[in-house]
Image (cartoon, rainbow, N blue to C red; front, side):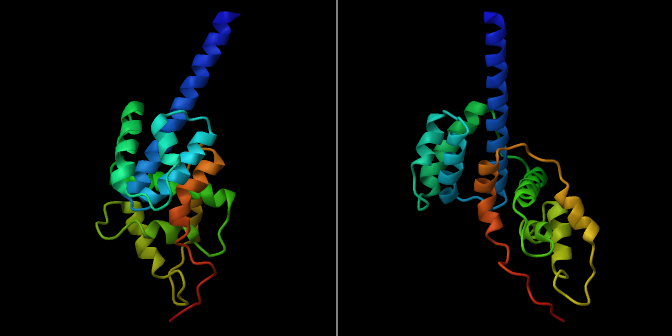
Length: 192
């Protein structure tokens, strides 16, 4: 029986490590896309602590206020990422991870505006346009609130169906909050 309990414990530890790596990868992707700043790390760290993460750097990050700067957070984030073997994803992969994060968040908490995924992901395109997905959203966003618009509801639906990251809901909210806050609070008026 001891062997079975040890095996179950090892399996549980592997699952927890995979969750931590996935969460850190998404956080690094959000940073790369400009959607997660130093002041957002305390909320993310608190969510990770509540999910059972015991990394000392995560605990330290959770104790900071939103006014913390990158000189303080970056060494802690780098140390925990190094321990878990997480590197910053490239531009396209970062956009894909942020898109999946936002799809998870919008499935749990729908937005009050049309095409929220396009609105959110369009913000990831400028200035470098390194992601085809973000660039496509940027092109479509211009016409979302226009009566003369090109409308592609299938594209928005496709974005909502991106595969889930399988992260706990509180962690998804903490990671998504900075970008989600850029959505208009009400449906913008039509123009043109």
